[in-house]
Length: 420
Image (cartoon, rainbow, N blue to C red; front, top):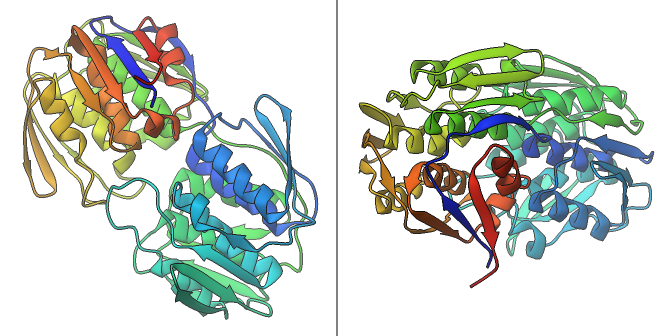
């Protein structure tokens, strides 16, 4: 397996282009199943999860091609296999997002129960409950979800938890259902809004996306789309934290400040000067050591769980004591043991980690455990003395496009090593 080597101690300086959002690209790619007409998606990042999604859609019979480096063209008029096999779904939890579109357009779906990062239980019961409310017959057998329906019918759906993929799946199912659907306690994340905007461009009638109540008027059919995905707020946040940790000065080009309010507030509390424009965010630490901050994760617009690991790393070298509480996933502190190998002073108590910042970390061999944990190890390596080598970096490649190249452009001494 490939590894990443980092020689720490260099303040990051310069600007970096933020890629399209992984968590928006994947559902929008799945939405191509809702139409017979050609679809064109721009600003697509080069990620392992995108490749897996393309492979899944092609296996179903969709025709997928590249128009240019960052644009994918899809035609799903000849889809003949309404099945998502375990071999693909086990590597990427977002594969569950084919369920709603397949049942809505074809009347049947067979989708393996999902896998993905080992960060805790993420049940799909809300997806199944919502599809049943829309009139689908759903059963789980031998590790597969099997759903059938003549035509889905609009319904009122009250989600027990504000699940992002659940909201997206049900929204895609409802756009072809007969009548009106109301999704209450819907997820409010920017990626949900981006999917809704894409569906609207296809002819869907959707209101309320970005609030906890989404109203959908079903259509008989949808057109294709020509759409550009929004910038990845988590990638932007990760580079800004990297700048803060190294005492640097970085501009994240393409980033949308409104999607990162809670993160930017915490960075300002850490001592960073933040300036923003419509499509950029700039952070200047003026060479200062960051101050410790307390973080408590929550669904949007709260502090994102996908930024928790990065702020755990920031607190490791910050001035003072920071408390980080993980309220979304119960198994998302696997990076703590690895950060301790670098000399971090951390104590884990249930869903909380108490971090006393130390002046410096010392490089060591590390093992990546999941996507965002991997990013936190890279950030720690940027400020550690000596050399840090991170193994199993395929986790990073699932969510960060060319992370070593982008950090290298900002002055980091980082390189990818072949499997050893």
